[in-house]
Image 1: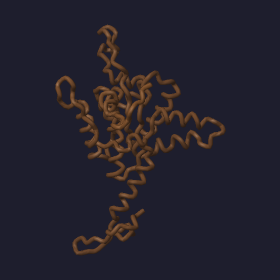
Image 2 (image 1 turned 180 degrees about the vertical axis):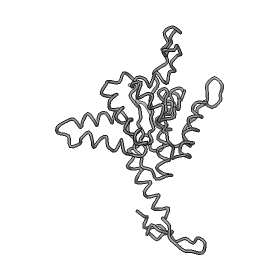
Image 3 (image 1 turned 180 degrees about the horizontal axis):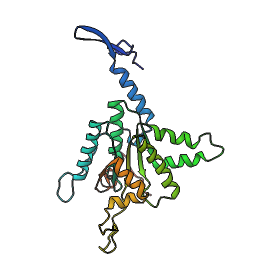
Image 4 (image 1 turned 90 degrees about the vertical axis):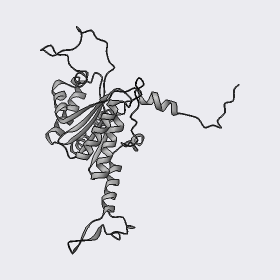
Length: 268
């Protein structure tokens, strides 16, 4: 829908141009902008992450060296590169500890694709999605499982945030497998964030290994909890972006929480 106050097209959605001596009309930018704004509203991005962009992603300095965190810098670089080269035949899987900035970068990718390319996208916290599916089983509910899952499966770009990362049940595995397998078959782009489990101090003897004796990487061990088949599919359909950092919320955000200067405490 065109903007009525647009001077370029006078509210028609089409502006006159001249190319090679021939006058014609082309779609006005205001119409593209209006569509992008509408798609952004429909993407379900939580208010907390509404302003997440590449520009305000904090590539924090390494406390030991004072240099920019290399894994965070690389993660932002690959995320921006992904947007620049879209459409691609793969998605992105951000994996790392809590507070590393996985959701920030994933949302930045989703917002850029919507605003710059006018692409339909959808944000879903995986736990909220599971809750909606469970609620659809209630006979009183007016929403069916099909109505919940169909937009998730069909949307061009899906962001699945906080993929379950601790002892998922068989039902959770089956639900996730259905979503990923359906999008895999349709060659849909999927963005995923998941949290690595805390590092474990294991002896060389206790470390998980393949039948050939090779140690299984931590990322692979984290994804294998969803099943070997699904893990393999994720490796095929997503570029793995591993992020290593301390918890941004604890290290930075907590220090920034301040009361107003004129706030006083009345002591008894």
